Image (tube, rainbow, N blue to C red):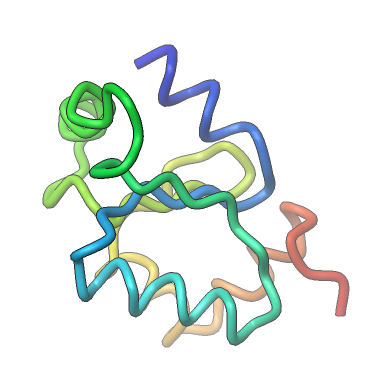
Length: 102
């Protein structure tokens, strides 16, 4: 989990993903459309990606991807991100984390 914590604090927005996951793609597209440039870790393309995915599961991510961290804090998966977006909480969170300036 130390590795997850380290990776999650690298940038204001960090997404753990799998390259073949359609919900991961949707979340990455949402952030891209906002003009946010998250650090994306494709767990099926990096060494020890399975270990990171297991650590995300232990943190409570179910399913384990996508797992979104904003400001170093776990926000959750696609459902949580979309809920934040629909209730207009996501943009203020991104501003507070320094991922958006407008």
